[in-house]
Image 1 (tube, one colour):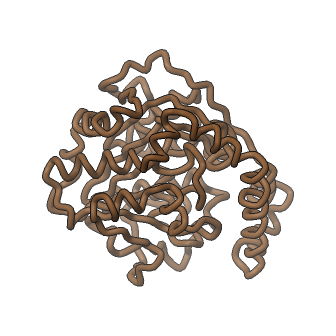
Image 2: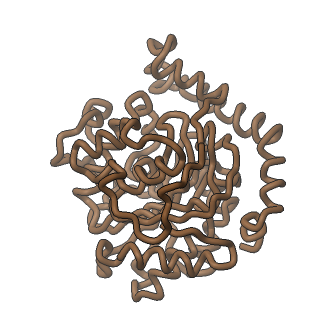
Length: 353
């Protein structure tokens, strides 16, 4: 954990990764996937992997002798968010491709998705996908570095390293798991521990979001960056910083109980910044759109769930999401927040990329 500033953030990322002894967990001979987070196809502060987060991690890897031909940007698509648009709007592609000359892969375009049989007992994934759990073949044996941001989420209260895998290992039908999202994240972490050559997470909290995340959030600039090989621990500390009790969040508690990582902050060693007194007082909230989703997944519209998520009628839910987020909320509310952010030191840094 470090506190950072726009003028020192790249050097601070180097210090952060080395403080966390990242190279112990990422064998140099493996391909290394940088799992970039894109929560919206447009730019909104705190929503997606920041360019300096990506730049700092890549710069550290290259400076420490990791081969550039074995490092690549890694994206997956969703049914409502275009990764190809998002990587441009969020200035991620210019960092990966233009500045550092690395490969940039979109997993949903890869023809080699295989059926994987986990060794660990699954909580829900084998039931949600009875025909088999399909994952990208290329992920097997690769190192992966998750690049989440510090923010809240309408389904999981907060989203971090564990949730970032949701957009990596599962294909476009992953929205089928939303009713059991907590159990899904735990299952995915168990699979990751089986398949990846190395597993690490670097979380950017320079710009963060509170409220109805991962998109329509209040923008904050706390200036923290976090790194850990323990996906549960980094999420637990992030949750605690936001003002939540980590073990009250089901996915963190379940992963802790399953022995997949440490979710109790009292058992986690923190190097760098003293955050014992940090409480950002973030809160979870809903939008009109997410209230509808909760009704569909857990409320009065539950009997319609399969009809509206697993048949051609699913397009109605896509249109509803676009209508609310892209056509109403961003033009009416989000655009002005972006303009305000651009006047801050972090906003000016973003514009320089």
